[in-house]
Amino acid sequence: MTKIEKVLYTGKTHTTGGRDGAARSDDGRLDILLTPPGAAGHGTNPEQLFAAGWSACFIGALGKAAQARKIALPAGVAVDAEVDLSMAGDQYFLQARLNVNLPGFDRATAQALAEDAHQRCPYSKATRGNIDVVINVV
Image 1 (cartoon, rainbow, N blue to C red):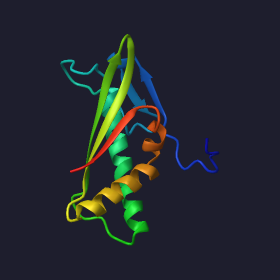
Image 2: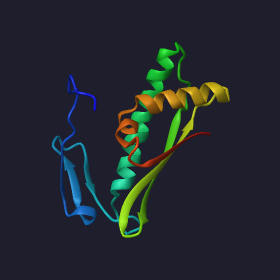
Image 3: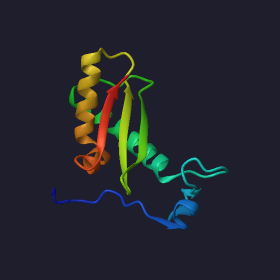
């Protein structure tokens, strides 16, 4: 495991009630209701939150990958993240797909950027070897 040399930021939340609860960040910028997947009413679920965080981080990693190649990311870069809550027997698991849209790049360049970003992104590093992940260039 890599030894951390410097902490850049610590996200802090207080969550109550689990999937039928609420979460709030210590700075008040995040204040959400939580509901189980598919439940009626307002609220989100941990899978949606994870997908949003991962896709945002992945776009940042795409920027670093492009910068390393001395190319600019085009307007309209997007990542559609799909995080599945799954079961095998009586155990719960996650699996994910990141659908990467890099308009204006040829397929080979887009694929290389996506693969590089997957090596750089902290969320990708955290999940590597722990859940099934597919990176699709669309």
